Length: 321
View (cartoon, rainbow, N blue to C red):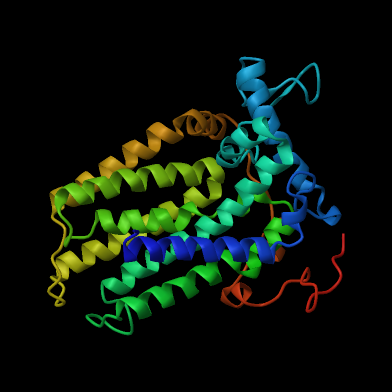
């Protein structure tokens, strides 16, 4: 017999999975033959399928580095160090690609990112609400109300139009968003003075792992999370210096430094096979770009989480190449 908390988590995962299949329909009917994408945007989905195939081809078939390919611009070849590889997507898709085929591996990895994005926010918001972050310090929701609010937050994050538009454009790296809330949750727990030191250290290790996963999926995400980490640390330091009147136990200086070191070392060790070549490229070459590029049309504000995109079947419009 499953315990009630476990049943709740399984139910949340089940509902997010149903929604992921329903809202991506008819993808579920063509998991082994089709992938999300649109012809008006350079067929980026094809490059991510190639990434999955080439990652295995380089490492297993050719016993060479996946960061360089002789198959492009032969015989000179090309470096793939700063290429939008999405290593995590490529790794996750390998078993199903080998067992069935390439489209299935990519599609399941893509659907899993949606389900886990919702579940990660569900866990994060339940944690925050359990700490009294509901309408004021010290006010807590009932467990049922907190779970319902957290489920709704996961819906907005995982199924918002901003993620849908990237999936339809074939930008799978920008859809691999599941590790963002997991990192935020682990980071906050590593600095939570109400937890035992052993649990804070464990959370710090998870934070480092999730930071590495974000970096392996999309380097831009890791950069944003570094900024988020700085904001969290500033908030924690201000709270310590002001001796917050909430009465909540604060993490010690030793605990704070330990958490940061554990997270940083873990992230570096896991991410280093891709990170070190990237840093080497940045230090030796000039990759600065002028202007905003496609940043403005592809950016999103708070309204964008709920507003239908141009690809919406009822409220959208024509996509101009």
